[in-house]
Structure formats: structure tokens, C-alpha cells
Amino acid sequence: ENIVYLVGRADALSTLFSLAAVLLYLRRTCGLRPSLPAPTYAALAALASVAGLCKEPGFTVLFFLACAELVLRCRWRHFLGLVLSFAAVGGLRTWYVGGTDAGFGYVDTPIRYQDSKLTRTLSYLYQHAYYAKLLVLPWHQSWDYSYDALPMVHSVADVRMLAILAAY
Image (tube, rainbow, N blue to C red; front, side):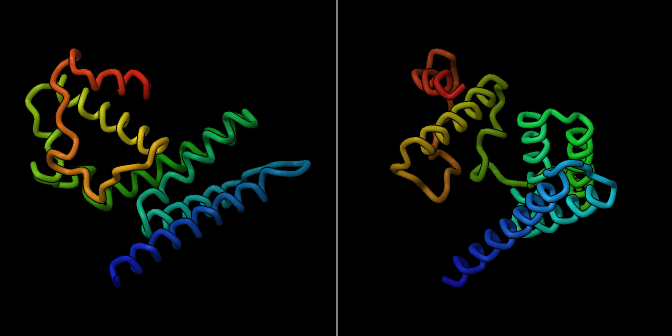
């Protein structure tokens, strides 16, 4: 139970700081004269960094805001500032942890260790399709999809290709 409480706190803290970033962004960009000066970008990057330190998806709040800016308002200056802030936070995170290699073994991520690039690509695409299915039909969920929980897709003749096509 203690682990569940800690994970719940990490989720809640990451959400808190991500929402604080969204609220700061909305406060600065809504109104008669929307502006995002450099200190606001720094504050957004700091909030995203703290959110990401609580739980990794928190790092994506700047990218989310950039996409929202592009789709909803199409202000290129704000979009570029948010994307550059996201890139700076991502670069800092990558530098701090020493790269993007998590060092998982074969049992954790068997797709990565497949020799065929086709098998790796199709299997990763099938994972996305499977997760999309779980969003729509959330039955038979598992807490761990490692090793052989989702079998590899080795060829385009596999019937699971239909799920990949449906997802994309």
C-alpha cells in the first residue's frame, strides 16, 4: 500500500505543477494584449521541469501548450517559444540523466533486442494499436506488458496488422 500512496503522490504533484504551467500560460496569453516575455518562458520551463521531476509525463506540458497554441490560435511566435522551451527542458533532462538509454533487459523490452528492423517496427506499431484499443475498450488490462505479454509481429501478413491500420 505504501508504494501505491507514493505513486499517487507523484501523479498528483506532477499534475499540480503541469496545471500551474497551463494556468500561467493562460493568464499571460488570454486577454486584450497577450504576451509571453522571457521570464514567463523561464517560469513555464521551471514548472514543467518540476512536474517532470515528479513524474516524467510532466515534461510534456510545454509541448502540449505549443500544440494547443498552434491549433487554437496559430501565433507562431508563442509556438516557437514554447517548442524551444520544451527542447531546452528536454535537452537538460537528457544531459542530466546521461542520455535516453534506460538500460532495460530482454525480459523488460524484448522488441528492442529483435534482429529484424521490420519486426521491431511492426511490434512497436502493434503496441500503439493495442493501447488505442485499451482506450476504447478497457478490458483485460495488465500492470506489466513486458516480455511476451504482447507477442512480436514478424510480418505484414500477420492478422494484427489490421489493428495497426485501424489505429493509424
